[in-house]
Amino acid sequence: MNGIGQPGRSRAWSLNGGRVDVWTSTEKGRHLRGRSSKNTAPELALRRELHRRGLRFRLHVPLERGCNPDLVLPRHRVAVWVDGCFWHGHETHTRTPETGPNAALWKAKIEANRARDLRALELAAAAGWVGVRIWECEIKRDVSAATDLVSSRTARS
Image (cartoon, rainbow, N blue to C red; front, side, top):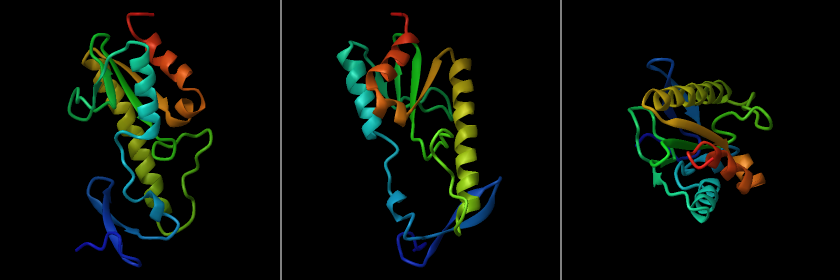
Protein backbone atom coordinates (compact mmCIF):
# COMPACT_ATOMS: atom_id res chain seq x y z
CA MET A 1 0.00 0.00 0.00
CA ASN A 2 1.42 3.41 -0.90
CA GLY A 3 -0.31 5.32 1.89
CA ILE A 4 -2.79 7.30 -0.19
CA GLY A 5 -5.60 8.44 2.04
CA GLN A 6 -3.90 7.56 5.29
CA PRO A 7 -3.29 10.48 7.67
CA GLY A 8 0.34 11.38 8.08
CA ARG A 9 1.39 9.33 5.07
CA SER A 10 2.61 10.63 1.75
CA ARG A 11 2.58 9.61 -1.87
CA ALA A 12 5.10 9.98 -4.66
CA TRP A 13 4.55 12.18 -7.68
CA SER A 14 6.92 12.48 -10.59
CA LEU A 15 7.84 15.80 -12.10
CA ASN A 16 10.69 17.29 -14.06
CA GLY A 17 11.44 14.26 -16.19
CA GLY A 18 11.47 11.45 -13.68
CA ARG A 19 12.59 13.11 -10.46
CA VAL A 20 10.24 11.85 -7.77
CA ASP A 21 8.97 14.21 -5.11
CA VAL A 22 6.65 13.28 -2.31
CA TRP A 23 3.21 14.75 -1.63
CA THR A 24 2.43 15.10 2.03
CA SER A 25 -1.17 14.45 3.01
CA THR A 26 -2.65 17.46 4.80
CA GLU A 27 -6.04 18.11 6.35
CA LYS A 28 -6.37 21.35 4.37
CA GLY A 29 -5.91 19.57 1.03
CA ARG A 30 -7.99 16.49 1.82
CA HIS A 31 -11.07 17.89 0.00
CA LEU A 32 -9.14 17.86 -3.30
CA ARG A 33 -8.54 14.11 -3.26
CA GLY A 34 -10.72 12.12 -5.60
CA ARG A 35 -12.09 15.07 -7.57
CA SER A 36 -13.49 13.96 -10.88
CA SER A 37 -11.89 15.31 -14.03
CA LYS A 38 -14.82 14.29 -16.24
CA ASN A 39 -18.47 15.22 -16.10
CA THR A 40 -17.95 18.13 -13.74
CA ALA A 41 -20.87 20.45 -12.93
CA PRO A 42 -19.61 23.25 -15.25
CA GLU A 43 -19.06 20.74 -18.05
CA LEU A 44 -22.58 19.33 -17.62
CA ALA A 45 -24.08 22.84 -17.64
CA LEU A 46 -22.25 23.69 -20.88
CA ARG A 47 -23.32 20.42 -22.48
CA ARG A 48 -26.97 20.97 -21.55
CA GLU A 49 -26.92 24.44 -23.11
CA LEU A 50 -25.11 23.27 -26.26
CA HIS A 51 -27.66 20.48 -26.69
CA ARG A 52 -30.57 22.88 -26.07
CA ARG A 53 -29.27 25.02 -28.93
CA GLY A 54 -29.12 22.05 -31.28
CA LEU A 55 -25.34 21.62 -31.25
CA ARG A 56 -24.46 17.94 -31.11
CA PHE A 57 -21.24 16.67 -29.65
CA ARG A 58 -19.26 13.61 -28.58
CA LEU A 59 -17.63 13.26 -25.18
CA HIS A 60 -13.97 12.66 -24.34
CA VAL A 61 -12.85 11.77 -27.86
CA PRO A 62 -9.06 11.66 -28.12
CA LEU A 63 -7.96 13.57 -31.22
CA GLU A 64 -4.27 12.79 -30.93
CA ARG A 65 -2.05 11.33 -28.25
CA GLY A 66 -2.03 14.05 -25.58
CA CYS A 67 -5.09 15.83 -27.00
CA ASN A 68 -8.21 14.76 -25.13
CA PRO A 69 -10.90 17.45 -25.15
CA ASP A 70 -13.91 17.27 -22.85
CA LEU A 71 -16.20 17.36 -25.85
CA VAL A 72 -15.98 17.71 -29.60
CA LEU A 73 -18.46 18.98 -32.16
CA PRO A 74 -17.44 16.71 -35.06
CA ARG A 75 -19.58 18.41 -37.71
CA HIS A 76 -17.83 21.70 -37.01
CA ARG A 77 -14.41 20.27 -36.03
CA VAL A 78 -14.45 22.16 -32.75
CA ALA A 79 -12.78 20.71 -29.64
CA VAL A 80 -13.75 22.10 -26.23
CA TRP A 81 -11.98 21.90 -22.89
CA VAL A 82 -13.58 23.05 -19.64
CA ASP A 83 -10.70 24.05 -17.37
CA GLY A 84 -11.05 24.04 -13.60
CA CYS A 85 -9.80 27.37 -12.28
CA PHE A 86 -7.67 25.87 -9.50
CA TRP A 87 -6.20 22.95 -11.45
CA HIS A 88 -5.26 25.02 -14.49
CA GLY A 89 -4.12 28.14 -12.62
CA HIS A 90 -6.68 30.78 -13.61
CA GLU A 91 -4.69 33.89 -12.72
CA THR A 92 -7.69 36.16 -12.26
CA HIS A 93 -8.80 34.67 -8.97
CA THR A 94 -6.96 31.46 -8.15
CA ARG A 95 -3.69 31.35 -6.28
CA THR A 96 -1.28 28.48 -6.26
CA PRO A 97 -0.53 27.51 -2.65
CA GLU A 98 2.63 29.33 -1.61
CA THR A 99 3.11 27.77 1.80
CA GLY A 100 2.90 24.30 3.24
CA PRO A 101 4.73 21.07 2.60
CA ASN A 102 3.45 20.73 -0.98
CA ALA A 103 3.85 24.32 -2.24
CA ALA A 104 6.62 23.52 -4.74
CA LEU A 105 4.75 20.46 -5.99
CA TRP A 106 1.53 22.44 -6.52
CA LYS A 107 3.41 25.09 -8.46
CA ALA A 108 5.06 22.47 -10.66
CA LYS A 109 1.79 20.58 -11.17
CA ILE A 110 -0.16 23.65 -12.25
CA GLU A 111 2.66 24.78 -14.55
CA ALA A 112 2.71 21.29 -16.09
CA ASN A 113 -1.07 21.45 -16.57
CA ARG A 114 -0.76 24.80 -18.35
CA ALA A 115 1.99 23.50 -20.62
CA ARG A 116 -0.10 20.40 -21.40
CA ASP A 117 -3.10 22.66 -22.17
CA LEU A 118 -1.08 24.65 -24.72
CA ARG A 119 0.30 21.48 -26.26
CA ALA A 120 -3.21 20.02 -26.61
CA LEU A 121 -4.38 23.16 -28.44
CA GLU A 122 -1.41 22.89 -30.80
CA LEU A 123 -2.13 19.21 -31.47
CA ALA A 124 -5.81 19.95 -32.13
CA ALA A 125 -4.92 22.74 -34.57
CA ALA A 126 -2.41 20.51 -36.35
CA ALA A 127 -5.14 17.88 -36.76
CA GLY A 128 -7.51 20.46 -38.26
CA TRP A 129 -9.65 21.20 -35.20
CA VAL A 130 -10.52 24.56 -33.67
CA GLY A 131 -9.70 24.44 -29.97
CA VAL A 132 -11.76 26.30 -27.38
CA ARG A 133 -10.78 26.49 -23.71
CA ILE A 134 -13.35 27.77 -21.24
CA TRP A 135 -12.79 28.48 -17.55
CA GLU A 136 -15.24 26.89 -15.13
CA CYS A 137 -15.92 30.32 -13.61
CA GLU A 138 -17.08 31.62 -17.02
CA ILE A 139 -19.64 28.84 -17.24
CA LYS A 140 -20.77 29.35 -13.64
CA ARG A 141 -21.10 33.10 -14.20
CA ASP A 142 -23.00 32.90 -17.50
CA VAL A 143 -23.48 29.56 -19.23
CA SER A 144 -25.19 31.27 -22.15
CA ALA A 145 -22.16 33.47 -22.86
CA ALA A 146 -19.85 30.46 -22.58
CA THR A 147 -22.04 28.59 -25.05
CA ASP A 148 -21.97 31.62 -27.35
CA LEU A 149 -18.17 31.37 -27.35
CA VAL A 150 -18.29 27.73 -28.47
CA SER A 151 -21.06 28.45 -30.97
CA SER A 152 -19.05 31.32 -32.47
CA ARG A 153 -16.36 28.83 -33.50
CA THR A 154 -18.76 26.66 -35.47
CA ALA A 155 -19.78 26.97 -39.11
CA ARG A 156 -23.18 28.24 -37.88
CA SER A 157 -21.78 31.62 -36.90
